[in-house]
Length: 203
Image 1 (cartoon, rainbow, N blue to C red):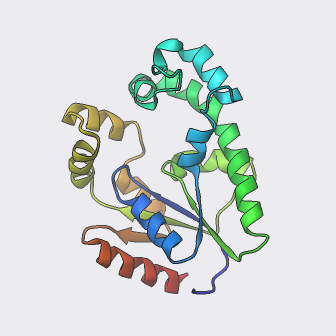
Image 2 (cartoon, rainbow, N blue to C red):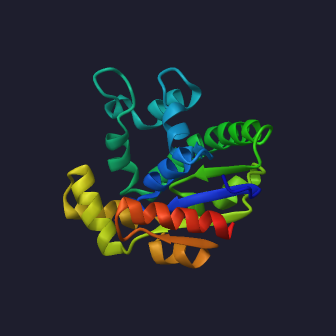
Image 3 (cartoon, rainbow, N blue to C red):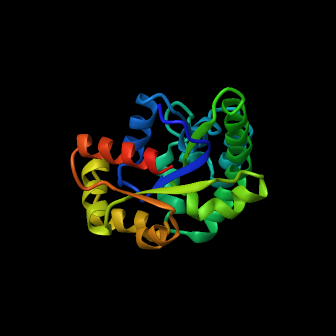
């Protein structure tokens, strides 16, 4: 394992392969805090965020098991900015607190932690308010056309829905400008692993 120190933010556009990079880092023995996983955990039935979201968006967002259906919720917030703000105001504080706790626990025993966040650049100001800061920001990059193709294939959705999801997020080119390091994910898994190793050496 390469010995570098710090808290590194890892992000990408949707369908860019960020989760694959997280998996490679984990396989190599590095700790990764998955903020998307935390965002799902806070939605578990009976938790404070679950209750607030159901109160604000109604029981029609629930599935037959009374769990929050993230696709139903997503179809509401991705097309209405004010609804997205309501959701973010509910979930962000919970996600930030839980993420910070996990990072602090890891750093008790390790020198480095990666924080996987799909909306890293969109929420970085909020993170700073919760004293969640990064030494460097890493972007897993593919161009917009590739994002659209992968998203349609991955989620089985129409092109119109894919564009709606992409348009609700910061443009991938804007993210590219803000990143300290860029991993271009245009090839095979093996090629991606090589690029991850090159990144670790750069860190």
